[in-house]
Length: 72
Figure (cartoon, rainbow, N blue to C red):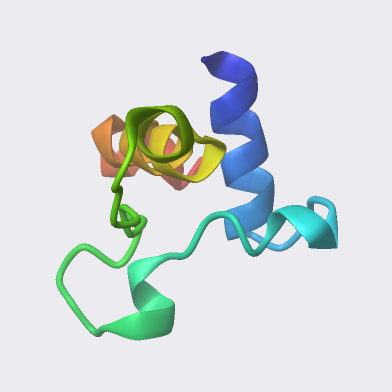
């Protein structure tokens, strides 16, 4: 889980590989909401390719972290 969070962090701040940036999408690219640091959870149809995917699990874990920890 820690490695997944590290990769989401790299994608969020655009310091990771470019091909991974498309897997995680933050709210700041779509909406202007209070939770700017949160990621969008993709719509899931299946479990195997939906809720067990990198995009879904990464966004879910990232949203569970407190805001003061994300800004370090």
